[in-house]
Length: 170
Ligand code: S3P
Image (cartoon, rainbow, N blue to C red):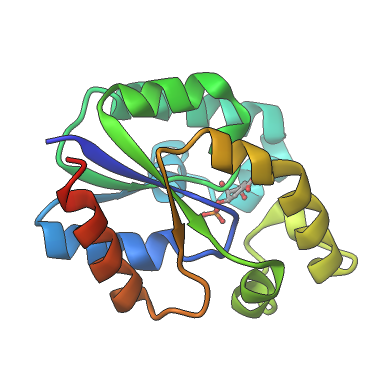
């Protein structure tokens, strides 16, 4: 069966919802950031700091190539995966792409104490989230097959709803 590919801004719940959805569907769960950390033996923050964002984006695209060959996986992508159209083409080869829609305030609530997202480090975090989300929103909308309004829901609740929506699509 096709993969289920979760896209959306940092801190929108891709990992927590993805884990629950995979369990409900009896699919394997794959977290792209964790896969990149394992294969490079570095934390995401270190990759950005030492090798730069461009190198990280190359690693992300290489992983999309590998994942396009897989099936029966729920894939939690990194929030920037949609910036490169090629990534989405690859992930869509055998996957249905779901945008987990969340407001800047929901995202801020989830990430206010987080220090693992280099792109949100320093300065006013809520303002950064608002600006980046405004830049990316149309990409998330255009490059996904389904938009899921999951703001304010518990991960288990969101996973149940997504599973029901997918019944008709997969
Ligand atoms: C990024 C999102 C992060 C991670 C990296 C860059 C982005 O993943 O891939 O820090 O550009 O939005 P999460 O969405 O899992 O936080």
